[in-house]
Image (cartoon, rainbow, N blue to C red; front, side, top):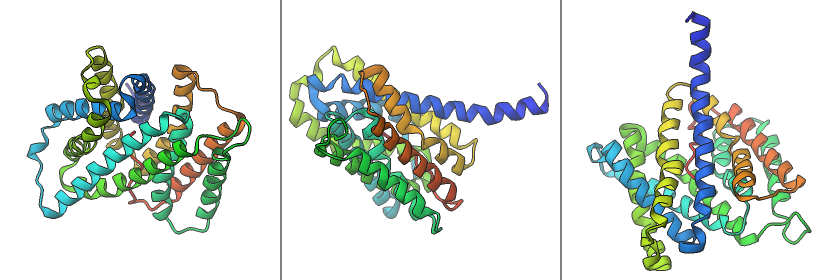
Length: 295
């Protein structure tokens, strides 16, 4: 293998991993939606986080992490933000198409990226993002409106995503990927009482457990691992730019697996938010944290 071929492989390999990770996350979300009739969004979130925490505990052994009081505080907030993000995102999926929910949720990392830059051009990205939101939330218009409560849940998930990024950066400074494992455990402890109260013994339905395990692998264990490998092999700005197309993966996954048809205006709205996110990521400070995926 010559130098040019090795260079091309080194470039394409992490991109491929990241695309697989995004496809895995959105496929997992589609599969998770099939569990809603049995245990609801609350129970689905609980099962996903419990199985994901068991997997990550076994693989990453986070008890080896070094935690002082400040780091522990950041890890706890990071874990609660992760739990809130998963819970609110699944709550939004009860009434909002997957692609639209992902686009609305993406306003969280988009805001983080915009705050990391102070250029006049950022007003263009803000305007695009606002235009996308206005196209997505014209409640009551024929064929264009979406459920307002579902939209609020997705936007709330975006707020949690922003906190997840900010506190994950602080918490992970010393312990790296072990922080992710700790965060998932805390998220499970945070959300589990809600799921247990809502779903009760239905959480133990035997036929549901393999599906929940698959959701945990597709939505958490596999993409987290692939993203971590990809991030170590590409610039953070490139990582963030590629992550910006995730709403499109959500829309395609919803179409393929759930039969969710979007209107032309909704596709344009998603495109506007993706463009705003790509632009904001490209103009952010070089040391800013990229928008890690965590649905």
